[in-house]
Amino acid sequence: MSPSVLANNPSEVTVTSKKAEIDEGHVHGAQGLTPLQAIAHGDVSPPELSKGIPTFPTYAEKRQWQLNHMAAAFRYFSRHGYVEGMSGHISVRDPEYREAFWMNPLGVHFGLLKASDMILLDVSGKVIAGNRSRPANAAGFLIHAAVHKARPDVHAACHAHTVYGKAWSAFAKPLEMLNQDVCNFFKAHSVYASYGGVVLAAEEGERIADALGSGKGCVLMNHGLLTVGGTVDEAAFLFGMMERSCHVQLLAEAAAANGISKRVISDEEAEYNFKMASDPETLYLEFQPDYDYEEAMCQGSFKA
Image (cartoon, rainbow, N blue to C red):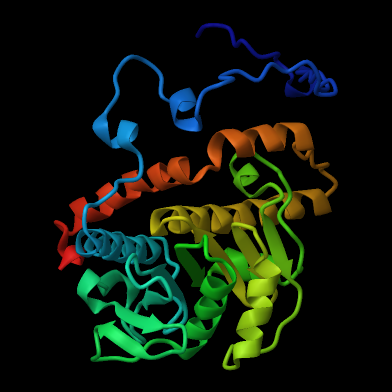
């Protein structure tokens, strides 16, 4: 037998660790490039990357595209276990009727939703088009109506009662910048540090919208998570990232409780990460691998 590369006595093995120096002197590359240009290496430029968010000549074509992607976002939510009975909803602003938005019907599993299942409501709550076989979720309508009214820039909003989001929400604290990915929320998320029960009053929806402010996401204490975006793709990708970031935060807190110190990313580096990764076009494209996967897994049946 060949001799071991380890010392005969395990206790004699010494693991050395050089303490990281204070971060300084880092060089931030890709100056003058868009985030998409910066991340794409080589001289190949696939159309889906070079074009970014598509545009359409008619409202009808854009509406169908939006509904297809909305349905795909629900399939993504289902695959990742973001289902909690009848709770949870996604809304998408209509491209033509800007004071109206599409929502999912009450009591249909996210994994079964199709584009044709969605309901179009105006901000007063009246159903004006789409599926009339089931009602919308009343709490969902009140939350999403308040967000869409307060934020004309918001095209889509996602809310669900996910495991790690609910667990972290019990602390009523924002996420720390513990890793590169969560920097997508650097100074762009908030906490609604109050709980008013099931949202069945317009005032509670308005308080949630106020807490969201101009950010991309909000931790709703004792409730769950809320994310928004310029496309449903962006909002859905951010929701998954926020849920995973809550998971990471909880793991880090558990380790810290046992005496292991945390190192949080500096504001300078977090701001750079945010600048290079959290623009609407990049976040739209971040969701496309999941869209393609969901489309392949069901042969595009959610488009029906």
